[in-house]
Length: 98
Image (cartoon, rainbow, N blue to C red; front, side):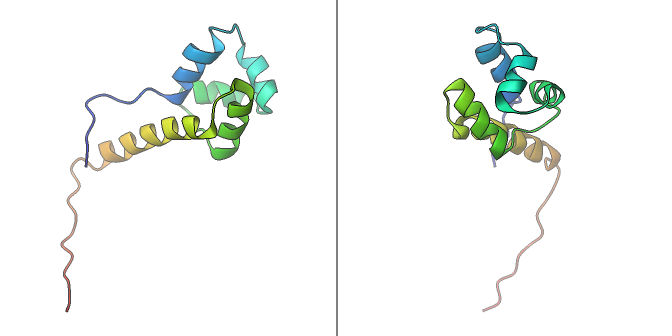
C-alpha cells in the first residue's frame, strides 16, 4: 500500500483554479450550467462534498473534459483519506484450510 507524503489536490481546487478562474466563470454560473445548487458546487470546491458520477458527467459536458478525469481526481483523494485512516491498522491473519 502506498502512502503519499502529501494530500492529492482536491478536485474542487482543480475546478476552481484551472477551469473557473481562467475563464471568469462564477460559481453561480457554473452551478446553473451543470444543474446543481451553488451551495453544492461551493462545497465541492472546498472539499466538503464529493464529485459523484452524475456531477462528473455534467462537468465533463460543460468543461469539455471527461467524467473519468473528475472521478479519478475524486478517487485519488478518497483513497488518500482511507489510507490515512488505516495507518495504524494491522490486518488479521487469514488461515488457509486445505
